[in-house]
Length: 90
Figure 1 (cartoon, one colour):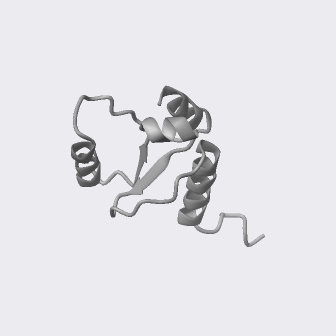
Figure 2 (spheres, one colour):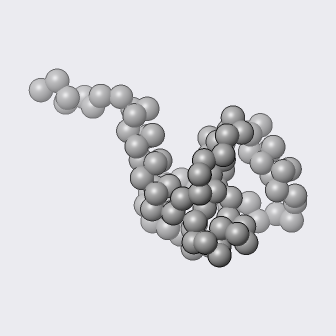
């Protein structure tokens, strides 16, 4: 999990870890209530496969992906939400 955290931080992604000894469903519910847009799940299965599972705030689970794939997805989402750049009309 620490490796995923470091890779996301190195890519400039704002990320927080939740290492509390709580049940996963409890943590997910809290994140949804806090309106966290993406929850990255890194459990035993993900560590073994070298991938992460991403859950959206609305409860939808994305297909497992690599950390690089997640960074790509987040950058694309960020660019799309920003709309056209200021100098696009030049």
